[in-house]
Image 1 (cartoon, rainbow, N blue to C red):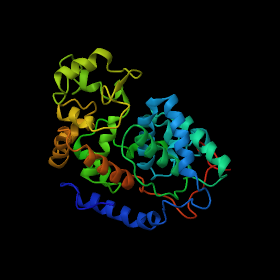
Image 2: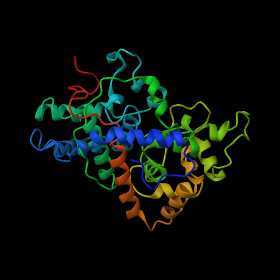
Image 3: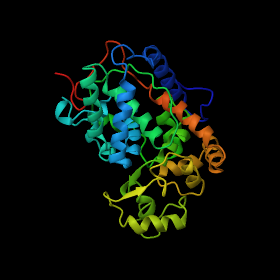
Image 4: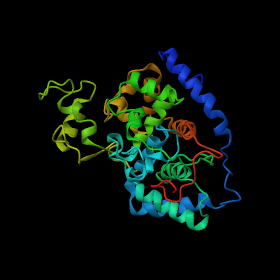
Amino acid sequence: MATSRSFCGSSNITMLAAALLLLLSTSAVAQLDVGYYSNSCPHVEQIVREEMLGILQEAPTLAGPFLRLHFHDCFVRGCDASVLIDSTDVANKPAEKDAPPNKSLRGFGAVQRVKDRLQSACPNTVSCADVLALMARDAVVLAGGPTWPVALGRRDGRVSIANETNQLPPPTSNFTRLSKMFAAKGLDAKDIVVLSGGHTLGTARCVSFTDRLYNFTGANNPSDVDPALDTAYMAKLKSYCRSLADNTTLAEMDPGSFLTFDAGYYRLVAKRRGILHSDSALLEHPTTRAYVERQATGLFAAEFFRDFAESMIKMGNIGVLTGDQGEIRSKCYAVNK
């Protein structure tokens, strides 16, 4: 999936790994089809959209978490819904769901709600992996963002291993680390900056960035702060993230419009007000910095919407299982017996 947009500085090994990933996944991706369920479950997208309307009316803050669920699923074992499996249901305990990077994930019950509706309409037909892909798309659309065609036909994995979540880019990542981890999934520098735009939705736990406020280099004193973070914004963050270990307080990723999908995130990043290390890291590379600065003008939101749709399609194709691979789970949290 790597294109001519690939960033500079990737190692030959990383590039080779990405090329092999592309080669291995091409045949599987070719089996995905927007009309995959046209005969077996013709109303699948309508059913998902109806359920999503109800879910987000009841809990509008779940739009961001649905997008994050899909991302965390695809970066570990590919888009196979392995992130949904309970630890009690796998041999190699714990499962991905209970790994530290996934402890703050939300929306599992809502995913099962959608799956249950589909089970009633089309028993044992629509995979949980496809449900996640459709819910992520609809979450963005219903929050005012772009739409895109979701090719379907993914199968569900039967394995989920907590230790494999080390493939997820941590919020503390600098650009070098981000670029290597995205390249391993066939994604490039433009995908990094575009998919980061998804941070326009949702919240982050204070603990994911409080080292920037209180203990940036490990000196553990009040002046040990991240110089890349705007000082006025830092003071604001400190007013509600009171300690380094605050694991309960939530901060809006895009303050004032965290329920709306827009390009406002880039204006924050350009002002050094990106809340995570990985947000600030977008200013470290010329390609991503240029994109941030262009979007920060507020004149190219339609371009961002198109780019986001393109990158989400690429991400949704990572490591998919198709054909006779995997299974169609009847319950998203448990492999079939």
